[in-house]
Image 1 (cartoon, rainbow, N blue to C red):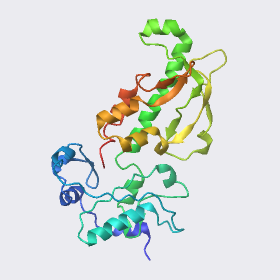
Image 2 (image 1 turned 120 degrees about the vertical axis):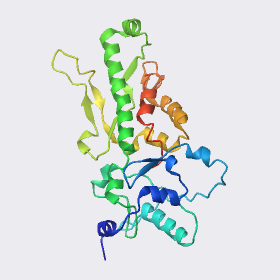
Image 3 (image 1 turned 30 degrees about the horizontal axis):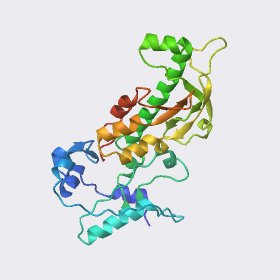
Image 4 (image 1 turned 90 degrees about the vertical axis):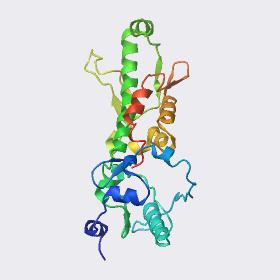
Amino acid sequence: MKSDIEICRETLLTPIDQIAQHAGIHADDLTPQGTLKAKVKPSILKRLADQPEGKLVVVTAITPTPLGEGKTVTTIGLAQGLAKLNKKVMACIRQPSMGPVFGVKGGAAGGGYSQVAPMEKLNLHLTGDIHAVTAAHNLAAAALDARLYHEERLGYDAFSVQTGMPALRIDINRIVWKRVMDHNDRALRMITVGKNEPGKNINGIEREDGFDISAASELMAILALAKDLADMRQRIGRIVLAYNLDGEPVTAEDLQVAGAMAVTMCEAIEPT
């Protein structure tokens, strides 16, 4: 019995533009990223607006076998079976997080003859969507700590006068926005940030923080739910990052970082 990687490497892969054409996706609907992967432009929704709706089959959860047959291989196998019955079908799966890929769980490209190829591209960077989520998420975290530092350094009134922005008066003990990374790193789950040499505060305000995995970011949920770029921008603006000294929420919009976060993720919203 051949291994998954052997099956993958022995398979002659069809260029992505030919696969797209077979699925009814035109060349001008695509943003190619090499010969084997591409992004689909949102404009395709307008072109197909008058077409009849398809049927959605959701594979929500399954307890995998010891050999790893779980949601992904079930989804791909189901799509292959429907195609064998001459049904128009397309499987939509999520990009694996690199944390489990390098952990005991391994990759998530399916298995056997029901897998996505090339598996190494899917399991690693693919089109960089998770990296975009990571960058946007940590941008908010950095902006939050910078705001803490400057309001503390200048004082609330002086900060407002010098910057023209209202003081957010963030409660250092009620910051709910951790940082993220796309790896399993146990040592970074609980950390202290903003440490300084004695008598200095150039590195920010010392506080407890930590890292989550990028796939657990609220931005990842927004990416899945947003219907277009404008909707994604509004949802990002409503993210609660912390609470102020009066117990009121401090949002990404309050921090004036929501627009930059949305721009960082503007290509990630396009299907791959």
